[in-house]
Length: 119
Image (cartoon, rainbow, N blue to C red; front, side, top):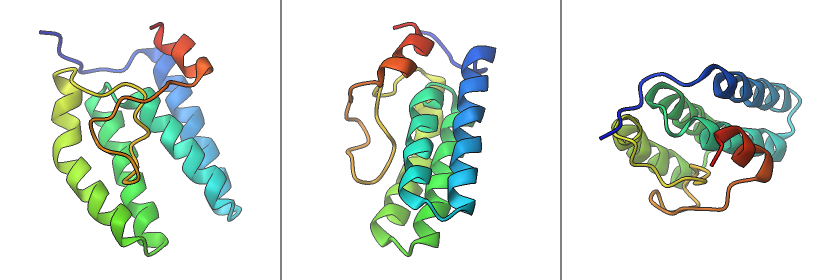
């Protein structure tokens, strides 16, 4: 069984770039764009416990900010189980992480991210 503990440097760079874009869009009240970058950060980091959990933490905060009860509840559930699933490498690749999709649903991976993940 493969255990994921540390994200590779090239993925960490891409993950951080998505989070920077998320922050920029959030500060400029471009909420749809902010969420888009948050979902991309989730796809990139979902196989690594720290990054996966942090993406869900930001999604939870986003849900609170927008008074989105469904998102808040969905993120609390994901925060309870997401990190350990990353650790044991049991994540549905491509899943964007929001409460609008089932937690175990595999989804298409954007082409640029697929190249990063080397799938």
